[in-house]
Amino acid sequence: MTGITLRMQARQDLQVGGRSSRSQFQYTLEDADLHELYVWAPRLVDRLASLPGIADVNSDLESSAPGMLVAIDRNRAASFGISPQLIDDTLYDALGQRQVATIYTEVDQYHVVLEVDPLHKVDANSLRDIYVPSSTGQQIPLSVFARFENSQVPLQVSHQGQFPAVTLSFNLAPGVALGDAVDQVGASIANMGLPVTLHGGFQGSARAFQASLASQPWLIAAALVAVYIVLGILYESYIHPVTILSTLPSAGLGALLALMAFGLELDVISLIGIILLIGIVKKNAIMMIDFAVEAEREEGLDTLQAIRQACLLRFRPIMMTTMAAILGGLPLALGRGAGAEVRLPLGVSIVGGLLLSQVLTLYTTPVIYLYLDALAQRFKRQAIGPGAPM
Image 1 (cartoon, rainbow, N blue to C red):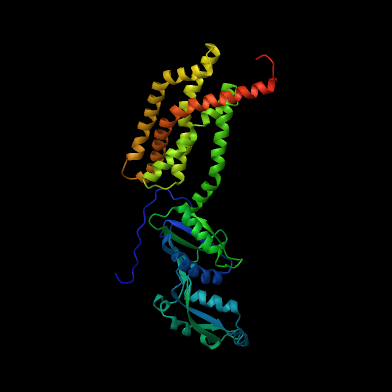
Image 2: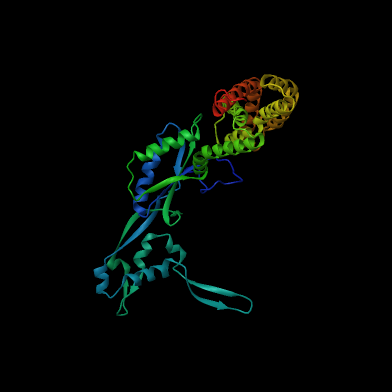
């Protein structure tokens, strides 16, 4: 049909903040000055449309509705004894839906609404036929002390909090990550020189991404500190927890390589998978270190013999537990159908991290254990002093 614009968007069972829009990601402008807001919103739409990483830019500003502006000559109206409030009441009586009475019957009640014939509401020239009572009781035509101007008015005025707002929405260009698009939008808006009264910010999924990205390093650091404290209490050592945590970089590297191989972004879901790897991957080192420490204390073996025996005896349990975790993540990585786009990054990051860490940690963990144990022994000798019995 002529004049209709069609935009397709995926239906979301769970809406992450913001409001419904024609595109996936949102940026909202707020301003107490409605005119200033409507002047700058189209400029910002044009600026975002020129960015290479942004597509399908639009806004919820619909300001093309025809309207009629009634400009009152206050001095001339006052000469007839007509106040602006009286003019406003008269126009509301004619064009509004003022309830003036209620008719009660035995079984129901009916509200009486005062208005002009609905056929006259669609014709702006009908304003010339409206009369306003003066202070002397005369009926004065509205056209005597007012002029009528054609104008364009918004179909609706949206609000964000207490201020009028316009929401701009956009999609990502093919191959562009959300983080890059957010940086492009922020830099472009900062260079426009917006008025100080005009404020803007991301909403919906883009805002959730910014919040998660800002707190993600602190969450990972808190998780690592918690793991280090628990392992330190378990082994009564400052060194052995470091050996166990040394397996985590290989897991993170494997997750990133797997995401790159599948052409996936490092989004919030894949970051959750990397955090899960912190708890899964370190069990390989725990199984080896726990056996080696026990062999040193109970059997009196030296460090090299203890870790070698741990590698030989714990190889099969390590392989079995790792394969169980990998096979558990494969349905997430290989599954298709509704919602697969959410599960895929999680499964790929888990499986990729487990595969690479399994290959590397079997060789790196014993080596790191030997070097860190030698370092701990050196610190112990320095603390006791030269020549002291060990």
